[in-house]
Image (cartoon, rainbow, N blue to C red; front, side, top):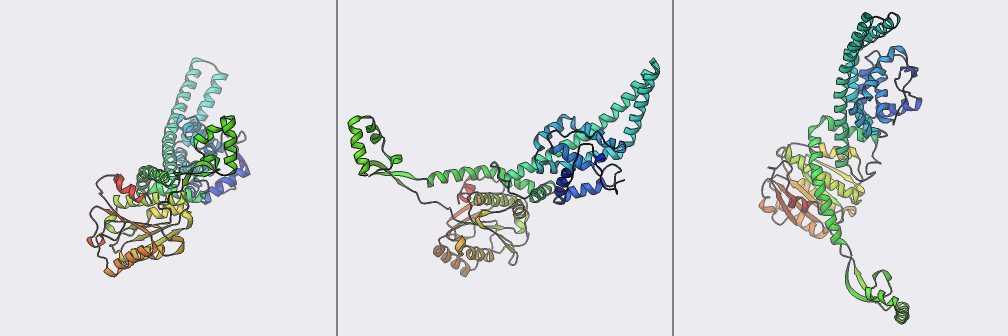
Length: 469
């Protein structure tokens, strides 16, 4: 049956050509949904069930298909039990008209529905048939015995339906967790302003969601990032206030917005108002002199992340959360952003994002990248200088995160110092676990040390220094 072309009477919910095409495009972009579709084809009535589940999640109140083929009625029975669950109604409030949320929820619900089709379909159809026959018999031959038979058939039917609801309830709970985790991670790793992720490709968001479901490291990074973002926002707000213009003196002019309150008061007096108008024409009103403060660290950002074996686990997760917080700052402020992943001598990778523009897939790749080799500093320091020497990265900020103590040649140290002075970039070192190498004492403008003994590395001062770029 599954080999035939899908027909409209196979669907439990009304499904038109647009619905089928819409879900088909989503399925093309999701490996997990393609796996679900393949599994569905192995069941006699499973082929159209993922589409029905998606429609139930995505649409506001989809109508039932009253022309459904009899052999597919089991699908409607499953859907009817599903949509009546209070847990599903809560999930639906989250997923309706949300393509990503609906697509993320389908696999867990489909798994539960497939289990029912495998384990309960034959029982359901037998008990449904028995109940219909008992009802007809009680109607045609009313008696205490036929009523008892009808009651017994009804109880067996309800027992089957309760088992179906139990399986579906577990599926809904799993789907709700998947949707919540995905929404939280997209908010943490991509943006939580209204519409912040609207320009992100659906395929990228679905890939991130699938990675979150299978990658504990990514989930941990998202959790740590949530705490770090709160600090990042606070630091950036404080820095913005410091950069704002201030009234530094009183001068003469005719800028109404900067006029002293005493000058404004003269407008209420008939004689003084004439004097005010004369001095307005002569540009001799007393007003505040507005001085713009020099911007603090509004240039491009370059982040060097140590991915040696000793950074594995919590240190790397924390470093990646800091990296993604820096990426958030660069993206929101449209600042150039570059990342250098490094480990052993030949293990070095570079990524650039002009104007801070990046996708959820870029974010995912930055987060999961890891070498796990040794530690060598000369290559990343040289690469960082090369990037900061380019016109689009001039006068930028360098953030260098490591737990290493590797020796750095004097020629590289001196070269870095000279280029930093000539190129006027700022460099911040974050040393994880212990003090930095002695020969780096004057290499960086700021050095912070953080200890990996706290699950969140909640060293606020270290974070404030790095996130004040």
